[in-house]
Figure 1 (cartoon, rainbow, N blue to C red):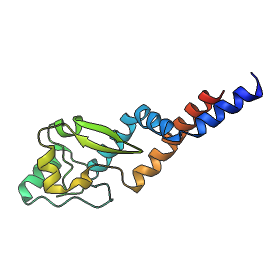
Figure 2 (cartoon, rainbow, N blue to C red; figure 1 turned 45 degrees about the horizontal axis):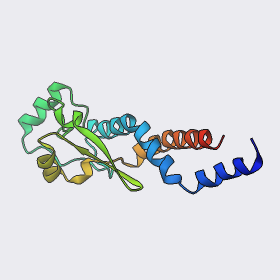
Figure 3 (spheres, rainbow, N blue to C red; figure 1 turned 90 degrees about the vertical axis):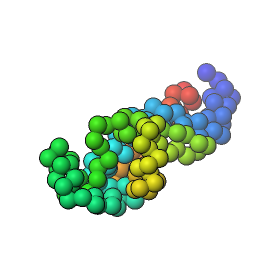
Figure 4 (cartoon, helix red, strand yellow; figure 1 turned 180 degrees about the vertical axis):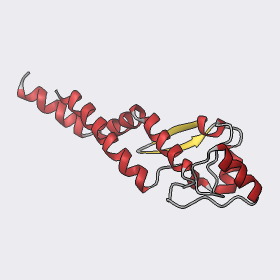
Length: 144
């Protein structure tokens, strides 16, 4: 490998960091979606706030009896699991967002807000090193 060829690979790779970001996001999309689901398990949105309480005490008791991990009276947005199973990662430019393909997605977003989708600071703290490791590995593979 000559110096000029090596230099060209580095310059080319450094001129397109977004390509590695997108690859890293796609490679780790299941982990990212699982982090969003884990937040909902705790009854939290992407801002770290608890979701709006149930209006019905009886339904809150029903959910607790089903094994909800969220604090009592706080939704986890899981009954049969279809909403969460419909989670998809959408990449737009240099950003990504999470949505659900489930038929209830619009209704749930209207009721609880769009912040039911996305990662809060705690989840981002877990995701960032995973994404960075993937980004770095792919970058180094391209320049070697």
